[in-house]
Amino acid sequence: MTKYLRRKIMKFFVYAVIVFAAYILQTTPGLFDFYGIKPILVLPACICIAVYEGEFAGGLFGFFFGIFCDSGSETVFGFNALLFLLFCVAAGLATIYIFRRSTMNIMLLCLAAAFSRSALEYFFGFILYGYEELSPFFYTEIAPQVVFTSIFSFPFCLLFRWLHKKFEPETAKE
Amino acid sequence: MQKFFKSWYFKVLCALAVFAVAIMIRAAASGSAEVFLSQAASVISQPFLKISSGITESVSGFLDRFANAEENYLRVQELEEELRLANEKLIDYEQKKRENEQFRSFLGLKETNPDYEFEPATVIGRDSTNRFYSFTIDKGSIHGVEAADPVITADGLVGIVWEVGLTYSHVRTILDISVEAGVYDISTRDSGIITGDISLSSEGLCKLKYLPKESGIANGNLIVTSGIGGVFPKDLPVGTVKSIEVDSSGLSLTAVISPSADIENVTDVLVIKSFNGQSKGYSDSSETLPEEGGETE
Image (tube, rainbow over all chains, first blue to last red; front, side, top):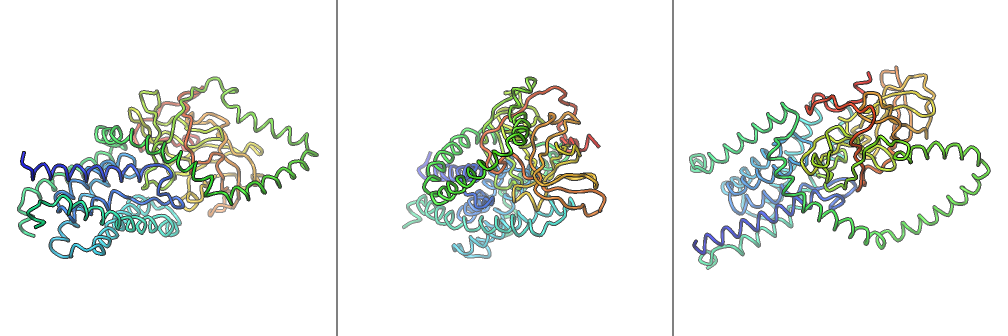
């Protein structure tokens, strides 16, 4: 096994540990709980991987950790896996072809992804069922969670940027 | 961009997306998660969740002493005031004694209901995407827990087991709009159906529907399960009436209920695995998930 390959395996192992830790933290009762609102930490973590490592790695991380989120979620099983995969691929491609890889752009990508996920959940989980008085629910539950999730994209962005540089091949650094 | 669409990366990602859509359709049709994937994810994460929730509980308990010093001071003052009021209320001793006996009969559920078979469980997960305080407990099918088993605390009804894995179960609370239970007012004997409400759930409240318009229900009345339908045992405390209003149709009353159990912060629960008259007749399909109220109608 070459040094380059070992380094790459190590890098993705560290990424997987971080995203898994994010899942454990977002699921732990009482942690990051502000008046009943909890952020979805896995989503910004996977998007950061997509931005720094490309759409394929991001998509795989999004899919597999989306499955974890589905295992404890009320949504239809596979909902998070599919959306995280699509968002990560989109974020990876957007970084290659449209945006610069800046902190602000990554945070905006996370905000867009979190908003899209919540909007789809809101539509398929609530609006389609015809529940009444949904507007306050959107403003007090869903919107704050989107904002909260986007805020957490900042530390993830810094962490994954640092890790990306740390694991960069020596030749590339030079 | 065209390079990406022609690459094998794209084909793999497409295959995963198709797979995700397939498991979604399967889950939506069968009403349950894809068993292998769901259980594999839960089995991997469960030990870490247990450790994480244990650490969080002990650390927050320690920090709360300092963080809530002012709150505790106010609480002491409040309790002193309550003590003074309690002393005044001794005058109504006989009346209170009768009420106490009534409440004691609920709190001593285990003594008075030897047919209940309990399974103590710990809350190990509250997913951030859950809107109605649903949670995951550390007991599953190998502990004898089954779907539709009632979940309670010493204070009253918390919810119902919704999905069961080998070593974990997902519980939906009575604040959830998909959970319904037949209940009655212990004072007036008027019955109705308790269920979650989107606007009330964030305040930790639920609503009692379909009360007769001529009902004498009043604020503070105790609401208990009716036991009809066999999903919940009879006379489990559910909560107290907080407010009452006429239904939008004008034909019945709707009451806002403050649950007896602290559903938002519950950490330890009891699963009632069996009780006399329990109905095990519903399948695991979402179409027929436990709606005791529905069965009573």
